[in-house]
Length: 218
Image (cartoon, rainbow, N blue to C red):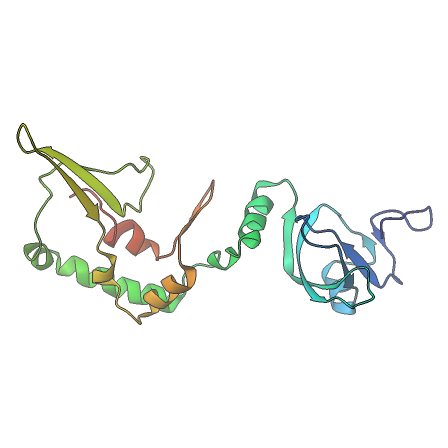
């Protein structure tokens, strides 16, 4: 609770305490009571002092008709200390239901991607002969210099005094990723790449989004 005394200082959880009060970071969500069972006490190393500035995932599980606060259940490990870069980034992902982007792509997906890349690189000249070669044009993107996943670009060419040609170049992702493949299923689950201040959580494995399906030079 929030009340403290000499016998029960604020932030110190006693062995006979039965609940924690969870204060949401989102003001639209009510405060919750989290029951202290043996598993949670062991995870939080209680009894003892508990840092109230640490982010935890808490799921509402029940709100009785006559209860002031709903019951919640702690999920997973602690996110981290509020105000630190890593904790705030993870919290932002959790808030927007994007934390499932954090794990890397599975080994099975990466094996499938390696086979795609190896085949495409070995068949490059044949594939290029079946497409219009635009490598002699000055194609540009508006991506920053550090960007690696260049999925769109343009070129501008003066045809004559009256006409200017504007070309829009889009990476042909569907040429490499077939419907129903492991990569396709995972891309549909992720829906989008997530760009953070210090990292990118890609929708596609990096050998695809940064290499095979990127409009790289030449």
